[in-house]
Image 1 (cartoon, rainbow, N blue to C red):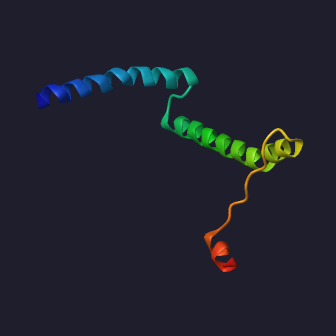
Image 2: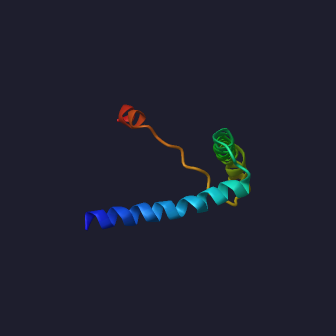
Image 3: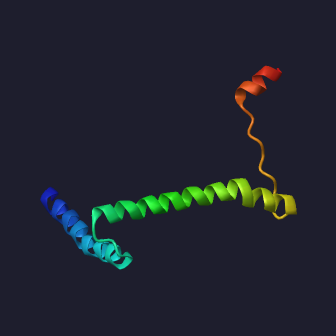
Length: 83
């Protein structure tokens, strides 16, 4: 039973490899350096999007009344100092 399970898992993984390679090829990635550059681009885009949302878009929409303003986080130290 263990051998059959291992062969099934290996077959499932090996069946997915061509699909993954096809997607990478469709995007235009053919080497590891291109894959690293693409992932760096995605990470940078996500970080920039998060920054713009937190610093520009959300405060602007809150000012216009479309969103509730973000609640200020209170540190536990500040709460304990007040008591």
